[in-house]
Amino acid sequence: MKNGCRLVRVRRLRREWGEGVMRISEGVVLVVAFAFSLLFMAAPPASAEESVGSADSELALLTGYGITHRGFGDTRTQVQTVDLIGRYGWFLSKEIGAGSWFQGRHELLVELPLHLVVDPKSAVITGGYLLGSWKFTSLGSWLPYVFAGGGIVYTNMDLPTMGSSLNFSYQGGVGLQYLIRPDLALMGEYRYLHISNAGTATPNEPLNFSHFLVGVSRFF
Image 1 (cartoon, rainbow, N blue to C red):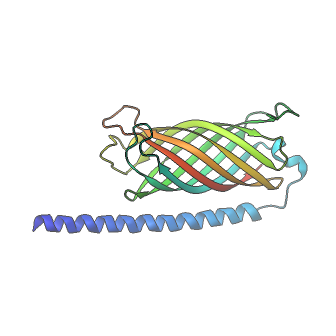
Image 2: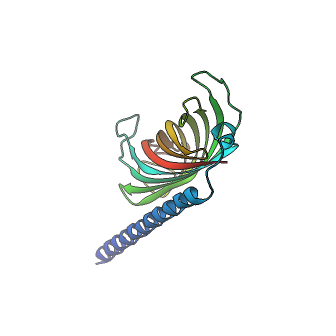
């Protein structure tokens, strides 16, 4: 009888948690839609002098999907996520290599990620990332970029193969922005993301993700 009551409580908690994550997901969609509308409506088009080549910073909002690669390294668990990432970029240099194929700018990226886990259970991965980036500026309205870095994340997945809720990450990726006006760009991005506790606890199954993201960026 006690086992039956305990099972009912566990099922009820799982259902309530799942409903909570669904409400959060709906809220994320509304926030993304609202933020995109603000970015598009906030100001009239900038002049050519205020383009990426002379911008001091950028704000971006990305959303997308992530999945682990079982069998890659020591990853054994499939984890799928719905992602929302806020990004602040600070340009560290003026344009370098003018006229060459690698013409571009150094940029420091600070990100606040929210990865909503939808498989194998409902959970959250969140924290902070610090990344270095190179943005190519020689292709007119097209702005390819590369980036790499790391950070610290917290998760409440409680996987039996992960010995800690506090974990570390490193990552790298490529992206492409397209200027729809001098101060506003649409963007698509791929990144590889590794999460593990770096041997600070046992067990320590790493999670090796691919994330596919789209978003919008505003330059200032």
